[in-house]
Length: 448
Ligand code: NAD
Image 1: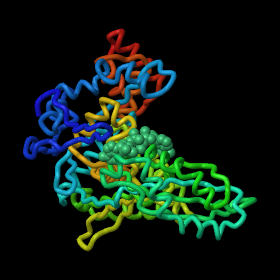
Image 2: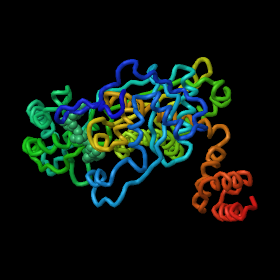
Image 3: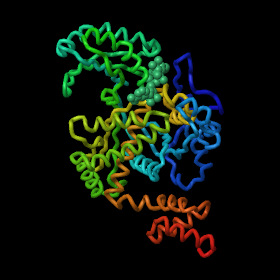
């Protein structure tokens, strides 16, 4: 694809990416020795293995990325923009298609770990994914309803009228095949009274959907309250996106992981996370390390996705792990993950942030569902990588080098000093600010 050519078909409010021409990019995400490449070489790799042009990469350049003016149109009281490292995970093959995955994160080891787990999975065919329709819920809370049970039935009687009124709000969504699919009425007992809560179930197609469903909920709240004979209060989407699930599974060969004992230990570690909320929180964080990095890179709402993730993790009343780990009949590790994934391609920052647009282009996808499935595959890979390290050497060894570099920079090291100071601290197993300062002083005096 030639530099600067738009991949977006836009017609008024409708704007969705188009997949690059078939065969234009024979993507090979398997890139050995990636970490030893220079930034320039990595950029060439991205251009060779995605629809991105060299010019597209300027969106991730600190000097040419998000402008202050653009930022000022995104949020309030802008004084600057925040840089977060953007890398790509290699080795992913998802449903038989190789893909380089953009990840934005400040945490060392995350991108390397995801790439490493993806390398192991690809030997067994990679990741296989699926998902539900992109259904979101909006809630309309009715208060001061005298007869909640009867109100529920009255509202359900008016189902067709309410759905039609909500759909009138978004002709574009209807034209695209989305819109309200159903309503539910929940009676929620709270201290003091029973609230009648109307749920609008909306197919939001390629949108994250918050604005779309909020508009619908606001539009029909008065009428719902009239029918329910109460007062409308909250009218907003639920981030418990339990009808919008994406799933991924993959096999990790015992040999590639390091042996059958490691498979057993990973299964033990994961089993603890299923029953112990203290462990589950960290276990799930291991998955969201990857999930949030892709959500952020594509300009999606990280808080919405994390709210969905954690509310799903406690859906049975007890907080638990969402990834599942088993040993298959051949002794290999089988991992799977099913999680709410409210991400979009058409609204929010995804539409306006140049770096987010390039991230979507890098993935060469045309639907929000494809994005959701890629994100879940990355979350699964991330979790496997984390557990493998925990079940073997522990996290600190891998983290030490990068942590030492951060400590060296904090102590004032620049350029080649960073490697020299951090290498000494790692060798001495003394990664501390005061030691970094001492070594830096020695380096500068020419003693080291
Ligand atoms: P949006 O309103 O910008 O875009 C959705 C609209 O785009 C649809 O209503 C439709 O009319 C149109 N559209 C065009 N092409 C489409 C396609 N292919 N598929 C679907 N719709 C298409 O965005 P949104 O996704 O409704 O809202 C997302 C934003 O809302 C995010 O920035 C999020 O942070 C924010 N938000 C979140 C919450 C929350 O999570 N609780 C609350 C309020 C707002």
